[in-house]
Image 1 (cartoon, rainbow, N blue to C red):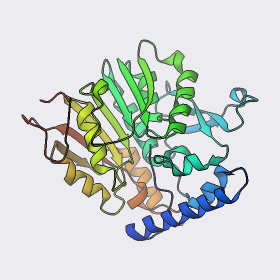
Image 2 (cartoon, rainbow, N blue to C red):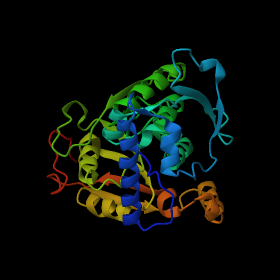
Image 3 (cartoon, helix red, strand yellow):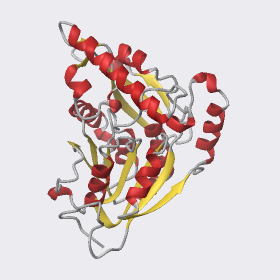
Image 4 (tube, one colour):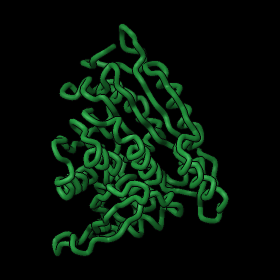
Length: 323
């Protein structure tokens, strides 16, 4: 998922981004200074000050029997949810050292953990699981686990689920997770792929292919916002639906919505689930735990293609199926 900022301080959005950038370069400097060019993920978490980590919607237990002698850089967890007794997934989370290639590659924020927005997206998809039956589904920017996409693949009887991220390390981990849960997929075709958002790319093999696209906390990259919209517009069917969950992060959510209006009908919901809203209010009342609704509470967006004869001005599309 490419999902999630790693600072939870009460800073202005601009200062928060600058602070995160300074931390990133400080961390990179530490890596370069070391002979092996490696730094532990625990050190990365320490630098990132990631205090608030979960709404408690999922229950996790380490799976010791899944640990392998040659898999020292990861730990497997069993994910369950009290409200959905059928929900049970084995998820591999990376614990080994970070290398220079991870710190400087295409967005590595989803490489360290499952972020709150991905957790809420998974819970939301479980609540709407029947809507994915017989559909083609794609998760964009799913990070280290593509947890929501894996849940859809395992429990919805979807026709096809494509799990994607722009970071090669994430996608390799998702492939292992897919293999570890393949007995749950039934007839659903599940694939993983690296997709780097590029407004000039045609994505020919995937154009107009998906009934439903899901995405969590991927809107705060100023330099990639238009690229993300191009990918969504290109991959989505004419009558398809996009579900996005992302925090406001200053005005980054609003910027995305304004840009999206060139090619989509945009619907925003702040209070979209009773339990999630209750969890949000509880966390908000405990500010000492590092909770900041501006960077943690995900707003729900629905996007549907406008019925235009030509592609919108900003979202330049080639090869997409248009309504």
